[in-house]
Image 1 (cartoon, rainbow, N blue to C red):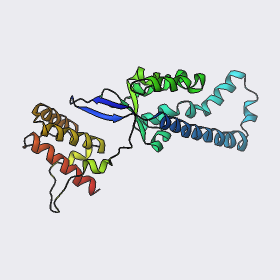
Image 2: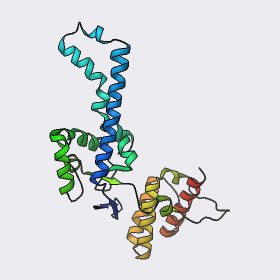
Image 3: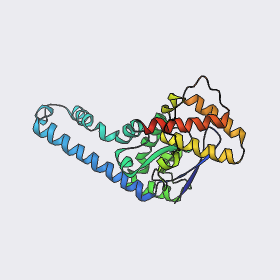
Image 4: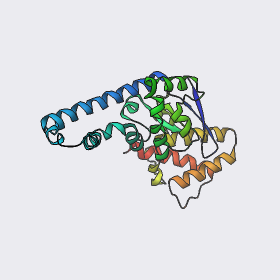
Length: 247
C-alpha cells in the first residue's frame, strides 16, 4: 500500500492511497474487454450486415487503411476520451473505483491526459505492459512513465471510511441554509474542507483557516459573507450537508 501526500492549493497536505497494481491491471483488462466488444460489434454490423467490403474493394491500399482506421478511432483514443470526460476515469477505472489525479493537488487537465495516452505506446504496448508494471512497482508514487511525465498518479477511491460519514454533519430539523452556492462543491471537496478545517481548528492554525476560507469563497463564487473564518467554514459544511441530503 503506497500513500500519496498531495499538497493542495491551500498548502494543506492531503493523504491518498495509490491504486494497487492489481486494481490497475483489472481496470486495464475491463477496458480491453470493452474495446474488443466494440471491435466485434462494429465488424459484424458494418462489414457483415452492410457488406461495406464490397465498396472497399475498388479502393487503393492507403484509402482502404484510412477507412478502416476511422471505424477504430474510438478504440485508439478510448482512454483519452474517457479520462477527459469522466474526470480521470475510464469505464474500467470507474468499476474498480480508481482515478487519475495530479500529484500537485490540481485537477488533471486535457494536456495531462494526452501525455498519459501518448506514453501508453511505451508503457503498455511495448513488451505487453512489462514497462508499466516495472515502473509502477519501483516508483515511490506508483507511477508509470506516462504518469511521471504528466505529473499524475492513480489513486483508489475505496476509503476505509465511507465519504458520507466523513462529511456528515448533525443538522437540526429546522436548519435554514445560508449559502445555496455550496452545491458547486463535490463530495471530495467537502471532505477535504472538513479534514483541513478540523486539523487547523485544533492546532489554532489561523493562517490555514484564512486560506481555506478564501479558497471556498472563490470556488462557490461568493461575494458577501459576515462570519469569521471558523463560523463561515462551519456553515459551509452544514449547508453542503443540507442541500446534498435533500437533493
